View 1: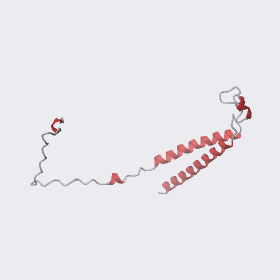
View 2: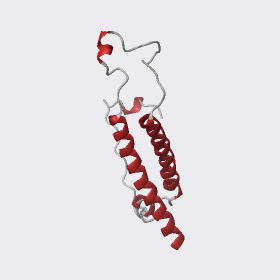
View 3: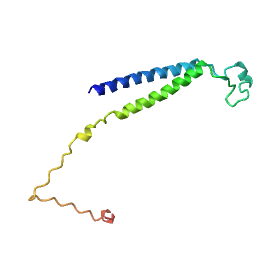
View 4: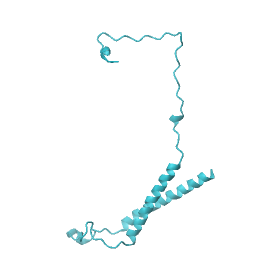
Length: 127
């Protein structure tokens, strides 16, 4: 029981880290300067020699975003692993016992089935 509590505590810590990393990634992406946000980009000067615009050396914000993205990926995998370790919950429908209908008494007569009407198509149905 104590080991189960330790795993639950670790799962809560990983979940909190996951949320903090997600917020951090959002903030870092919003803080970064876009590549095509210069005034020259409006007049065709945004794509200077590369497919995705001018590329320079990665600065602190872009490297931090990459690190936080990798941490987000790892915490996602960790949460998936924790979820897979949990025992499967049983459904109420799985534990319900099905009641069988009572069989008719041996001396009781079974009511006859009504015969189809003469204009019925029931005789055309293959059996």
